Length: 413
Ligand SMILES: *[C@@H]1O[C@H](CO)[C@@H](O)[C@H](O)[C@H]1NC(C)=O
Ligand SMILES: *[C@@H]1O[C@H](CO)[C@@H](O)[C@H](O)[C@H]1NC(C)=O
Ligand SMILES: *[C@@H]1O[C@H](CO)[C@@H](O)[C@H](O)[C@H]1NC(C)=O
Ligand SMILES: *[C@@H]1O[C@H](CO)[C@@H](O)[C@H](O)[C@H]1NC(C)=O
Image (tube, rainbow, N blue to C red):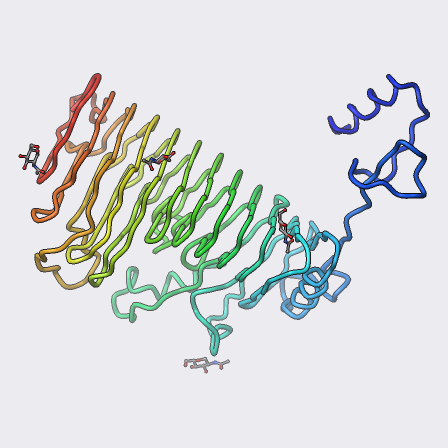
């Protein structure tokens, strides 16, 4: 019995009235059919994809059914749930759910959404997306189900895996673009084609209790990617992939991540910023309570030479590193390119970065590596209570270029 219902019964018992429960949800608007003094909220309307022809046999495409069901849900004038029932696997080609909708929509995914393994299903559509929510306000996506990107066919043709292939984008499994007031919770992501879940140009986003898993060798399979988004909270999530656990890039502000477990993968990353001379800004980032297990980086800020803009007011605190190759790293000479990057005058300015209570083990001798730009040095970098040792317990080293540091508390290295 839910706590709310229990409290209702207790409250009713106290005032000694007969007990009626109308629907399974409490208490919002009054209705004439209800005894005086009681209020009920009506049942939420439910739109079930199976009622719109979804087969859920994992073999025939269910796009048509999902598109029709979304249309019905999105045009509902009362709050509505789009239900993807449990016990079935829904095979889907690239699919877009457009807003705006008439009311708040909850998408409850209990079953498995499985991506088509035919790359040609993306012919004539944007290869960057598999499932896309575009321009939806007051959206919740939850339900405990699985989003399976079925990415193996895409990994094989990645230029990072096989250099004979051209470098081309592969789909992000789930993208939210231009969504305001968005909650994503209790979902499992698996084997995305490229990134697992991405937020672009969104505001007021709450992501919680998601688990993301893909092999450590899968290329570019970032866990959660945030770009151009404001007020984003990510909490209580476990992310094990082949690329960044969390990546926060240009135009993002007020992003908080708490209670995150990462690894394998490339760790928590701000950037890369400033590629091809771009002006980009990231600010007001807090990562509080994270555990990184066997990742190539711990907490990283990476910018290309020649960029403009800034990354500032960034705090990493209460972080545990478990055999991480570069636990703390700022790389202002980032160069993820087949050609070497030449030295440039401008750079994305990095300032106001605090590392507090970061401890654990480094898989290499250098636990702290600040490689800042000569022309735009890092400013206001604060280290407080850092304790990073190598796996055999020997104290590790730090490397600093073009940086002004202040240190507080205990500090190793
Ligand atoms: C979204 O929620 C806000 C605040 O509750 C409300 O004012 C607005 O009308 C809602 N819009 C939709 C489309 O549900
Ligand atoms: C998709 O495009 C590829 C490459 O352009 C082509 O070889 C293939 O025949 C196309 N498939 C379909 C189903 O259109
Ligand atoms: C810095 O970022 C934090 C969020 O991590 C925010 O609470 C604080 O207001 C920001 N400080 C400034 C000066 O903007
Ligand atoms: C560090 O600060 C000192 C004093 O404020 C200044 O002279 C020096 O140029 C700064 N170094 C860098 C790399 O910013």
